[in-house]
Image 1: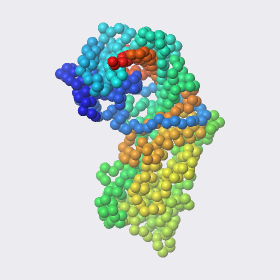
Image 2 (image 1 turned 180 degrees about the horizontal axis):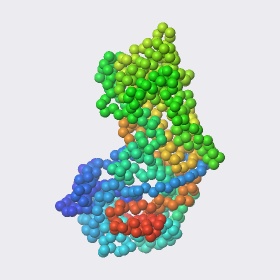
Image 3 (image 1 turned 90 degrees about the vertical axis):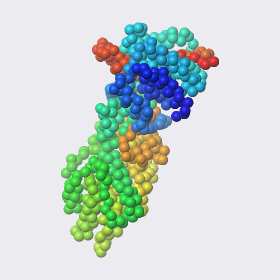
Image 4 (image 1 turned 180 degrees about the vertical axis):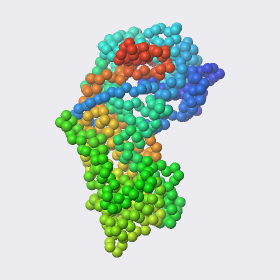
Length: 622
């Protein structure tokens, strides 16, 4: 941040110094929703009152990025074509439509709010003024016009315009009023702009398909690994109509997920990726400590903070002994039946069906089953004992592990090299046993992902095999295994997005293929938003892509979550913009409204839409 910018912010803070009010540099959900292009990096300065017990936390949050940025929300819009499909859409409105910190911002009377804005305008230097400045007003101020109910006033400045802004909370309304009230919106805009010139129209309609955006969730109520995902469709067009036309400017499908969510049916695969990452770190630490020797006699000790979600203690060796005796410990597990495709859903396949089949997928061999057992070990002594037990059974009891012809693990190669006179290996030394386990685990995961992708016909196998290269036939190099594990994590994240979308939309096979390909092109390779270092902690990831017209035609039969018109008229030296936003959830937190007002409106109107009206006057600088 530049020196000028810091001085600019401090100057505004000095305006309310030694008063009961605060000047906060912040991101405001309602500002970014109403005026998406107004604030640099989504930031502005807000005058408001903050209760003393909330002040410390508000100031702390001001000095760091907003939650959504700190969680590294990543992803980018893409262009892609889609085929025919059919859709069943369920719309679940979120509980909140604002950031948690906004509940701590208490409004002031409008007169004081206006005075603070006026002082800020006088104090700020137009050459260094970068952030819009707002005052939060009490819409229930008895001196206010009942219709206007001003909740926010502000000002901004750019190289061309000086920009006063006003935001109001008119009475709530119904869906029918929105659907047939276009002429009123246009007349209202022309009255405000004192003009009958051409009006530029922008309509944005949003449909919430599932969940709540993570940045809107109170982190005290829900931990990050419980997040179930968020999915919405947003249509934008330039005609004053309620429904999006076939020639809409853009129809975007937006998805948001968190790596490692326990709510995901793919969470078991992610837990294995994280566990393998921990194993690789242990090997690296051991090599660094013992001069890169793989054969040191020093014991490898798991770190004290090692946390294994699969830990089973003594049961690990018991299960292995059953496997070595020919009694498969997994055969008694409840079998997963293949779900037949009904005629109604003919042409569609669900990823979830194949996820359920993974524990009993075809071609499971000894290394797959051994990984399922050994991953539950909570110390390295147990791992080496289990590996030793296998070779002991081969040497003394003539045990022959059942291996697939395509099994290319290090273990499989070691078995193939055994003969009647040489059936012993020094597998206790250094990290050798853990290296064998890591190799088997990564190959097991590779086959699992290949199974999902091939059965869903999501990618050409030749393309996928280039990404998931075999590293078992080379010297054990940490970088090779980490690169492969990163590739698996990127495949996993792409499947997570597809699973979320399919949970709400019945996609035909070709549509699932196109959706996955679009996501995979973003999340695979060196430019992926998912980096290897991201495996350690859960993070938020997003994807935005064009939504097929079939989705738009289906969801327009549903009630929109929000509908917003932005009308603009421009003259020679000034420009007027009016915004009318209707949303199923209030745009402002409850502390802005009169107690009981929201509940009363819901009882009277039923399907209530909360109205937010904004006016921006752009005055060209001389």
